[in-house]
Amino acid sequence: MTLILRKNGHMKEAEAVPYARVNYIYKKERIKVMGERVRFECGTASEYISADELMGIREQVLSARETLVSGSGLGNDFLGWINLPVDYDKEEFARIKKAAARIREDSEVFIAIGIGGSYLGAQAANTFLKGVFYNNQPKEVRKGPEVYFCGNSISSTYLQELLDLVGDRDFSINVISKSGTTTEPAIAFRVFKEKLIAKYGREEAAKRIYATTDKARGALKTLADAEGYEEFVVPDNVGGRFSVLTAVGLLPIAVTGADIDELMEGAAQMREIALSAAFEDNDPLLYAAARNILLRKGKEVEILGNYEPRLHYIGEWWKQLQGESEGKDKKGIFPAAVDLTTDLHSMGQYIQDGRRFLMETIMNVESQTYEIVMKKEASDLDGLNYLDGKTMDFANKCAMNGTLLAHSDGDVPNLRINIPRMDERSLGQLFYFFEFECGVSGYMLGVNPFNQPGVESYKKNMFALLGKPGYEAQHDELMKRL
Ligand code: PA5
Image (tube, rainbow, N blue to C red; front, top):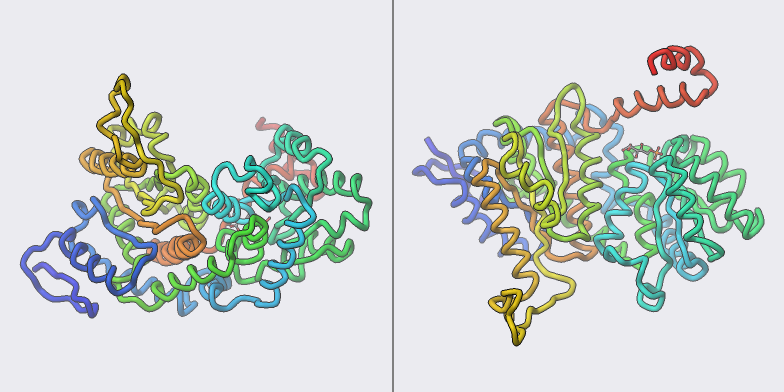
């Protein structure tokens, strides 16, 4: 028996209908009903996923969503992100905008210090919204400070080069750490704080330091209180990798002049779909279903691909989100990311022809920010005249479609996420789309999607090797093994 979905969410028996057809029917209706927005499609993976399989997993997906939204699952102390787009601290939101305006006024450079969830979302947003060359644009075009991230490594070379880049220019710092005790950002903050104090004196420096941390606990909170920094809060019930729509992400994003109201609005739209839409109209749920079906068929690695350099850090943010949320108890899809067509000339061979444990999810930006039209040349020495009058984006989409068909033929199913354009609204939708899918998928796998016990192992060893008080015994043990 083959089942197909009806618009009202009920199933009916039908002749064998490939899922591609079902998806096509619903896609057309969904476009009419929902309008322009971030949208998931099974794409060429529909050749690997039958309508029956999709219907077969439907109840598991809906049950995982119920576990998530009812707060009855593992890690339910960290579900604050679900309602963030509609239920956030409005007073703090206004303060974030004011601080951003002040920084745009008084700083040529803005240094955001954080690691993991305390920087990836903002880095992803800034590159997506403002472009790869934002920091290199003339001031008159940029209208805001250059924005740099540090505290996400312990490289003295990186930090010294950044100190040199700031030079004598006016700058401000946003130190971001939910725990307030993470070593990497703490080290970078010490170094940049010293530079700030040397330039402005202690009192003036304190006015240029913005601290985003826990409302009550941690070394950073203690320091911020003592020194009188302006403080922003990472809510208790929002974990690092789900915190981009809190002050963690919002201040470094707003500093570039991005519209954070639109960002929240976009996230609120996707939240509505995630919470209310029927399975066949529910993009995050369909994505969770598809990738889990493929996992069960041996596709253990998911590659998130983009055809836009502005999306590079979306891939980095997503790797943390999925990797830390699903990768535990010896389970989880391994998240990888590629930039295309760039990586077709490096990873393309493996994807096409290496071990067959891959699935791919392609982020497709539908409308360009800028368009370039190809022109005819008198002599056609490079043989490109056949592209006369065509846009570069047409060429990019041909590369994308050609590649996803080739990869499918090579047994790599391709899922697809369509993104209307590189603006705040689409980005808010995209962030929430991934977060919601991640929570659902984690519960489908039977793990706690909201903890990260594995991250502690390296920290304990590092503290022991650093000679941190309290780790003396481990120090000797580890030294014997090195
Ligand atoms: O998702 C997480 O919780 C982590 O990746 C954290 O964001 C990361 O470890 C940084 O932690 P903190 O903000 O406490 O410095």
